Image (cartoon, rainbow, N blue to C red):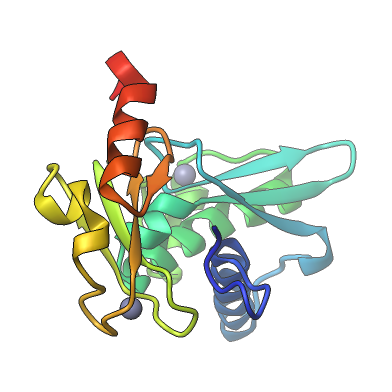
Length: 192
Ligand SMILES: [Zn+2]
Ligand SMILES: [Zn+2]
């Protein structure tokens, strides 16, 4: 099951849309020399320790900003927007100079954009509760297997009262019932 079934808009679409809008504002506000036609965006659920990354394809001269869905879910937007700006500085360096790091040139622009100087280290929450109602974006990280984690069918969304799913952070497995929890736990075995 995905978020926002009726609109066809998934959480990844939402994440990329917000990031692109934020990037455009930052580029315009600072007259940054970034070619947005050579800037691509993608979402990963596999980067377990990084909130974002920027890849450079030197042949196509295209920078790709990779954003981690679990970080988007766990962070408040202002923090995640800082991740977007950090990766934007990498994209700028790649496009202008064909390389990027965290040196003085990076730090200067990061300071100008009020972006974090270092790539954000990110610890995936053990569990995330996520409302399944289309018009509700309630999410809540949980660090232990509390009752709402083990039996989501017996509880309701903390905002709208709708049903919610639980995601196991490390594996990305989700469930909506107590038996689903048992099944996920059994399937993961030692890697739980
Ligand atoms: Zn970085
Ligand atoms: Zn809700």
